[in-house]
Image (cartoon, rainbow, N blue to C red; front, side, top):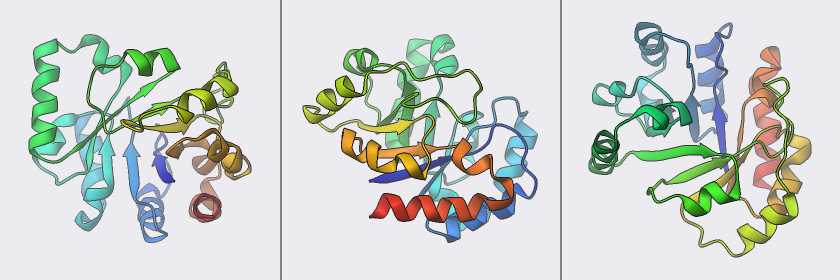
Length: 207
């Protein structure tokens, strides 16, 4: 089962040190999501991370950084997809394939996944549980319906669970049949224990 960490959208104290600590503790994929950051600040965070970790980093914005840094991939946000022209999107997919980058996005229902025609590597399905990081972002999906859908799913793109997941919910997520989980609030809401929380969560995922 894959485990993905999404950065806090806010600025975190000693964020670079915590990110490095996550990688050193076995994190394979970090999504950097900073929707309100200008390019210079966003790139500054990237520059502060040792280049040997770049192949584990996916970005949610400022996609032009893929021209300068040897990153893992691009996450296309709903906001971006709502404004991008079709030809530009096709070119982005071609560039990603040429550079062997992953492409991912977020969806919020089984119907969205069924109607999707784009060749993503994986999709976040959210919110599975009430969000830890977003107040008022509550789960509305039927878990039995999700379980039945995933039991008959062709496994590509991979579907990862997102929303309200902490170590206490890992077994339930596994039982639903997801390919992996993505977490945010479960780590960053414990700023003093982010890496420790990740290690405990990773242990549950690997069991």
